[in-house]
Length: 107
Image: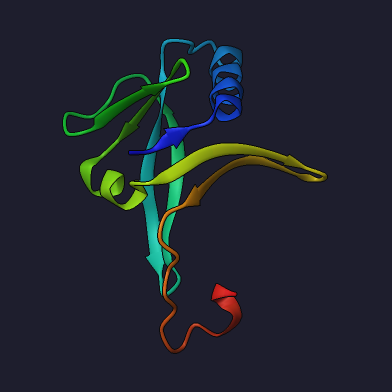
């Protein structure tokens, strides 16, 4: 299960409202992969795809395809505000294992 924090839901609903898309949701997807593990993306979409799982927490709809859902299982979708760093983050889950040849890209 993916957990959506209150703050992440609030900020996402603000963005959807500013875009005039209050009934829409967020689509989580795998945007690629490297030796350090997968990269994820977020998009604003009106409807889930046919095979998407729909998560509704804290007043926010999130759509995730089956493969991505399995990889995000146990993770938390949050929003951080730490000095100059501000934005959505995924935390928790299993840490990627770096193979040889990664160098400093995984540190």
